[in-house]
Length: 257
Image (cartoon, rainbow, N blue to C red; front, side):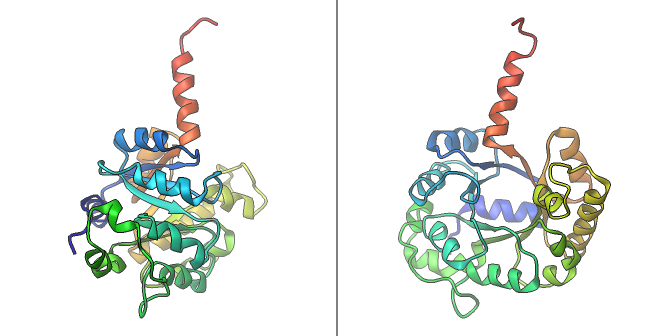
């Protein structure tokens, strides 16, 4: 298969241990994604878990990355094959599965992104080949290898089972979701709490030991650089709304009001 070059660049960077950067798009807006994709991001996660984004808008947002090296991924609302199916058929090159808390959850995610006999993805990729400028036979020939299975470790149960989860074959990257991780132990809104940080460190160690690439979110450059030093290769710079807020705040900086 003549596979999408941006996709292979992204996976190659992960294999080489080079960090990649992106953001989570929660605003249902094609122009917003175009701006983000044209601004140097390696990937964008279209957020169908927390954002008010339907499938039609998700399709438009996926398509809005065309002409750039930015790889479109989609976060679904639950670890269910039927939720993963349509975004892949619309051209997403990866699915972000939330709340993976066990080896069974991980296997379910892996099988959702691959066709039989290796998985349970149902056939119907009518629009994906158009997004990537390839034929249907070429898409089918290599998509099982190309599709990214991204799991999120964001619950104390997942951290306690990190070794069994990461032993599942077929996970392409594991992301630590510190917000829900803190919430799962009654520390909502307290990512810096020592107990939360201890869980993050345990998750990091388990993921890195497995050899699966590690991802997470950075609130600022200092945090991002520290994460790179610890082995992160996927770093979210924020949400679209938070990036806009920071830009507006920077615009007001120094202005007498």
